[in-house]
Amino acid sequence: MTTLLRKFRNRLLLLSMIAISIVMIVSLVAVYSLNEYRVQNADREMLDHIESTMLTVHDDPGFEVVFPPGKLFIVRVDPRGVITVSPGSITDWPAYVNAVQTDFEEMYGDWGSKLKSAQGSIKIDGKTWLYAFNFRAPPIEYFPSPAIEEYIFLSTEDTEKGLRRLALSMFLTGIVVLAAFFFISRAFANRAMRPAVESFAQQRRFVADASHELKTPLAIIDANAEAALGELTSSGQADNIPDLFIGRIEEESGKMRELIDSLLYLTSVEDGADDSSEDISIDLTAAAEDEIRRIEAVLFEKGIGLEFRKSLNEKLFVKANQKRIKQAILVLLDNAVKYTDKGGKVIVVTGSVKRAATKSAVFSVTNTGAGISTEDLSHIFERFYRADKSRNSQGYGLGLSIAKAIVERSGGKINCSSESGSTTFTIELPLV
Image 1 (tube, rainbow, N blue to C red):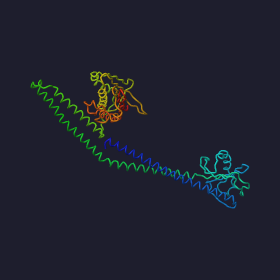
Image 2 (image 1 turned 180 degrees about the horizontal axis):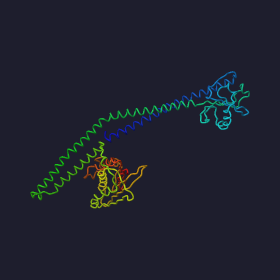
Image 3 (image 1 turned 135 degrees about the horizontal axis):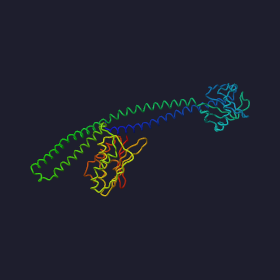
Image 4 (image 1 turned 45 degrees about the vertical axis):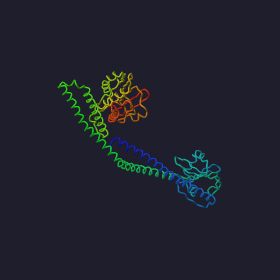
């Protein structure tokens, strides 16, 4: 599978996973909320039942009810302000003389002021309790005088534990379902993209085979042109045929050879060919200087100024294929010269930049000119694409595609920015 198709498949999978994750999260939250409402409502119904049972006890002192210890407790405040705490069983009230009562006496000033409604919830020692509040409860056997206040507290600890277990099980289930969905989706995506992969493979094979086949006739054309020129020279007839004709044959043959080499390189990059064995440590500033020397004559001929701002305080060593990196630099320089009018200026800058924890070497080329439109910027690195359709007499529109492939193959990135009056291409490569 080519890099392009792999990226497309990965983006498709990512979008699918995001969509299914959102749907699953919404579904699980809805299920959890419904269960939470159900169990909390069950606790409120239990509290209502306990409250009605207590009223029955008040009406009939002989009626005995035993509630589970630790699940609830009852607090009574008599007219004298004396607080009595019962641990859930009415028959246990007279024997209740432990430290719990003292604790609640100390806390009463704190949480008692928060009990504003007849029913609600409150945090006590980090635990949530539901409560019901009765006013002026009638007297019973153990409290001869009517209580001014009576609070019934019901623990929600069991409910909260159950909800936590439910949340954990739903989370684990969601992870398993997402993992299963991912592998199934990837299998189907690979199967669905198989025709496209085969089509791309056929195209790449055609380009590679055609390029290799074209090299032979080009070599024959070059050899015949040289032989013809040699034969004419030896026979004394060279003066009758202008050198321009044969020179043009050789020039166009060279352009065709360059196009073929470019197509072969792009095809090898798409196939994931690994030529890392040819990578060496390169000084980016020195490489830029070498390529600038190659275009100085063209700059002088076109009357274009050059400003080279190179890094003097640090060596910008990057690991890459020296020939290819120089080719990418030359592509950007040639592109800048091509689209700079006479009297314009080209600015070359080398330096470094730190992004997050990674430091990169930077090479940028800025040229004065009309700039590139926003619409063209999104296509500028596509093969055979030209932003300026009126200036297409030279080249094949492969230079920037090749530069992008070279830079990305070396672990870097290339980008273009343009505004009215200037265009800048920037290469960033990891420092070594």
